[in-house]
Length: 482
Image (cartoon, rainbow, N blue to C red; front, side, top):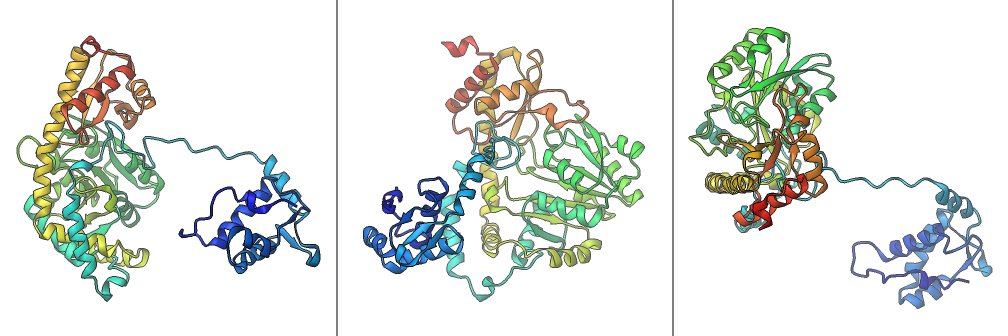
């Protein structure tokens, strides 16, 4: 008979969240499946094992009972408890079954650790965590019975009111709080728009280059995708008006195109609004990081010039505050408030009371506006550190395209092969550089590496990260060797 307690190769977690009887059950089960306990072999009695482990007998009885119910153990009265003979088949099947491959980490898609040059992430080191914690603690202490119920599926009235006030002042968007819907991120906003306004087979115009997640969602909705090129003046709206009059929706980032960073000109904005009005089409304006503009004041939102009610405006707290919030907002035309309200009432339980109230407190207390001003200055400085490090390392081999704002920059290496190959080399070294060409269907935007700079904390760190990039690309500068 095997001394079963010796197979419990690590101490039981007596203060853990997993009950002791469940820990014993799982370890005995694994010992059987690994072949450490053979079919037909007798195991220690519940009384003996309880004594060896210093536990109450009832704890071991509960584990043995579960193992017997599932067919792993077979009680035989005075002959003791033995490993079931039927387990032989399960052990053999487990040994011969192919192993599922381990998932490989990716830079796109599922969340990954923060890597050098990672795009779309705010400066975590500069987030006011102590202030946030104080506001959160006060909010938790003041929570009432109503906070235990399901939240309003449209979103907290306080937060929607705070967002409407903020948009009027900062983005020129005049909307009623009832037009604001709180969603679990930009993807949630886009999914909501696609479900209500787009049918399978409808045409949707997308900027090229594009935001990959948006393209995937549009395709999953069964829509036909029309890629519209972007130049230094933004989306080429004349392509939409000439070739895609039948389109149902246009996805645009007019303030700061993702990922080129250019702004759509006033003439093109007006042409796009006229197209939507004349053809009863919709425009979804993704205003993802317009707060971070380093030259002049932020441009007014396209929604602010929408007199016909054809623009839906999407904003997010992921880049202004932090992505862990999982909160975004969607402003819909007044004509669509009823339809969107009915849909969310049927399809969602809404977002967390606590998170929404915390953001509302942060905005109403004036902290939100101060935080944006602070981050704008910080990002301008960090971008400059990266630019200087790139010029020092690569010299004339790199051409850096700086736009008026944004949280990343575009570095082109015109005589050094494909950007996809360069990005692969960088990513193999743990650097999150992204290839511009992989975000373009037509390739009109050319090639280059997209590099985030928001989490570069010093000029020295910028130099170290760029040195690592130069090594990865095989373009180590003599300046760095010294």
